[in-house]
Image (cartoon, rainbow over all chains, first blue to last red; front, side):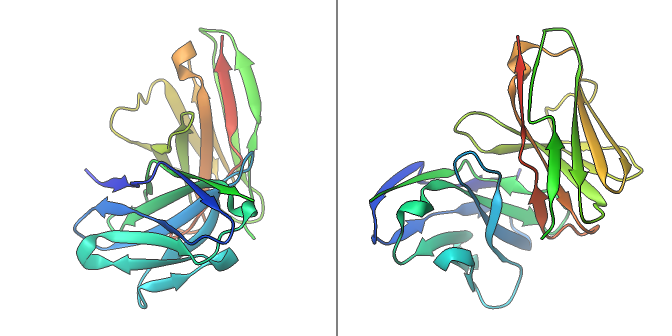
Length: 113
Length: 116
C-alpha cells in the first residue's frame, strides 16, 4: 500500500531560521507530489506541487520543494521563516494510477517571534 | 480561485441518528470529489472517492453502509453518517477536482461532527 511519511512531527523555530521538512513516500510508479498548509482554524491550502520537469519547484510565500526520485523524497524548504508560517504542513502524493491523494501525518510548525 | 464549501460547519447529533454533510463546488464543476476524515493532530485519511453519476469508491476499512456518499450533480456531493456513534466524532473534509484527472484538489473548510 502507498504510504507517505513525514519525519518531523513538531518543529519549533525562531523567526529568520531556515526550514526543511522531510517527506518520503513509498510508491514505485509515477507520482504527483504536493505540499499543503493548514493555518490555525483554516482549511487546507496548496503551497506547491510537482508534476514533471524541473525537480525543484517554487511555491507561494517563499516555499520551495525538491523532488529526488532516487530517494522517493519531496522535502519542503524555506530559507527564512516568519511568525505567520506557524501552521500544520502536509505532504501528499497522488499515484498516477488513480485520482486518490494520500497524505502524510503532518508536521506542526511553530515559529517564535 | 476554485472554492469548495461544506455545510454544516459544525453538527452535534445523538447516538443512533444519521447526519448529512454537503460539499459544494461553488465556481467550477467537480467531476470527482473526495471525502477525508481528520483526527485531532493527525493527517487526513481518505475515506472515499466519488465520481458524478456513479458509485463511490471506498478505501479499505471504510464501511460503505455506514458512510453513504452521493454525488448527484457536478457541484454537489453528500456524505451521510448513518446510525452515528461517538467514535464517529471527527472532522470531515471534502475536496473537489475540476477534471477526471483531478490533478489538483480544492479543499472545503471541513465539518466538525460530534456524536453524543
